[in-house]
Length: 517
Image: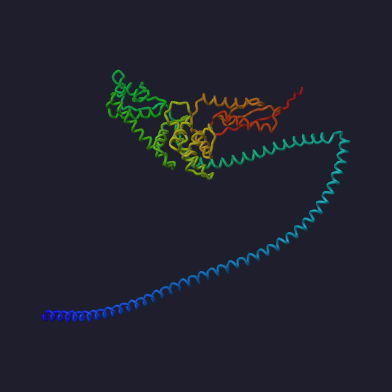
């Protein structure tokens, strides 16, 4: 048992020693941890103080900058307010000055009003006296003349109306004469300037084309066995082939100049090739038709370059090229269109208008003639419909549609194109006219004049450029003669078509006869 007690005592002593050791060790660690915590806390406090100082400095700087900005804004507003205050002071001074002026004017107006009132009273008094005198005089005049006041007024009015009408006619005639002279002078300047700058080729074409043959044996080859070649050629081209006794010549006849030109080129190709038979004829003619389309386009593009217009659709360009193979009264239509374009452009420049639009309208004004159509519509309407289809400028469309005065003109360019068309068609040598149509036109002019009341006889002279009208002097006075000339001119313009200008001269003559016996 002693040994067990010794063991217990040893175990207790060991546990106590261990506890003391652990306690001492724990106290040391706790002391070290406490010291470390104190140090960390001190470092944290130091760092916090440092950050606090830095943030405080930053805030103070921001506050300082913001303060400076506010001070600057306040200073700017103060200066603005000072300027506005100065303006208000100046306006107040100006208002005071104007108020003084208005007050002075009011005083002057009051003085003038007083004078006006005095004069008005004086005038009223004199008016009453004058009315009294007039009444007395009217009564005396009625007594002397035997007419009432109303009867005298009506008589005076009739006399004044007759005198005013006579004077008005004289004034109207003088104004019209001056306007005509000035308009004629200005128009002559513009037209002469345009004509002087334009020189057009003169041309006259017929409905036949002559093809030269290398020898007379070629006629037989063109005719072919039993005439099969010539029949095939006429069937494909639509052109009559005339082969007569004229040596080394074949004549192509057709009213359609397009077909005639294709036939001429085709037969020349067949002659050079030497192979003439129906199949070859058909092949050559079709190939020539395709080549002619390209030729039309080339001619149209060259015409555009000559005039200086652009942006025309290919289909319209081809129609312009076709105009080269058309004639009107012997005048080549393409040359005529180019001439009209140049004339219209020059006149537009003289009048301050756009020459490009005028040239464009002039070049395309006869485009409807190039369309192979089966309709009774005039070429102006056909051309206008084609241009509308391709969204052409409405000004150009109106010029094409109205250049023969068939519709109302909507722009001055239409008038220019119509004038240029008349100039180009009526200049000497431009066109041919058959005797029958010439005589018909002369009779038409004379009949228009003689159909008006008061006209005894009328004579168309100078190839229809002037109509001389003889009137009855007992029924037509001088003023009526001038009105009659205008009336006949307007009727000719409305009822007939003519190139250029027609002068109407009214002759009124009184002749007295006596015989000595």
